[in-house]
Image (cartoon, rainbow, N blue to C red; front, top):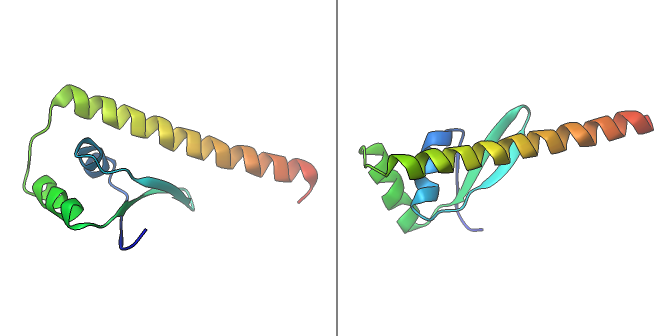
Length: 90
């Protein structure tokens, strides 16, 4: 991945996903950070979002729900790893 754009904004991320961009999710402390490859097309779509571009509401809602599932899964994975380390006495 070349240049990277990061955001904590799930709604911005949802819009960008609808435009065809795939974020990588990472957990930093207790926050989920969305990372995108920062291409020219990405910045055009980001500008559209910031300018108030419209998307289909039902698709946007489904995208947000899918992102929420990914966030929950990532957090649960971290908690599971923490519990396993604690169990082993690490």
